[in-house]
Image (tube, rainbow, N blue to C red):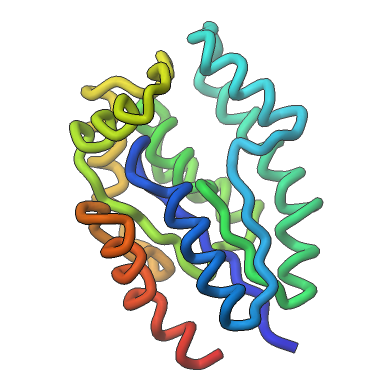
Length: 201
């Protein structure tokens, strides 16, 4: 049986994660892999609460906010990620715990402590693809989609801090891919970056 992979996509809002998850899923299915696509926060009870509170800009302490993310991830790993990996499938997730490191770190918590807590609790990804874009580029894409900005996160000065934390990460599973260019060009860059895994499978 093929070994399961957990490949997660990271980056600021508007970096193109959702688009690239779907493109990579299509490519891997064409290679005969069984692929599960997912996202964090999830649609579960904790994920729904996170989306509601962040969309409203509701007051919530940083520790309470992080605790909701951890509980959401606990369910996510237990119910979807670990069973799929055990079956030899590929899980592609739009965000995972490095988003907490960057976003909650930018809000004032210690990034290193967030990372250590999550790495102790949850499986490390096979690869974390960080789509690198500037805060200005990301917000421009969000606005171009016609959606409303998330008051808790989608502000330029905040996303600058998020990008700075992402830039400081040095992890063996982290792969940096420029998010500039067309979706096709970014997808090609992702495939090149994943070649060590794809070529040995």
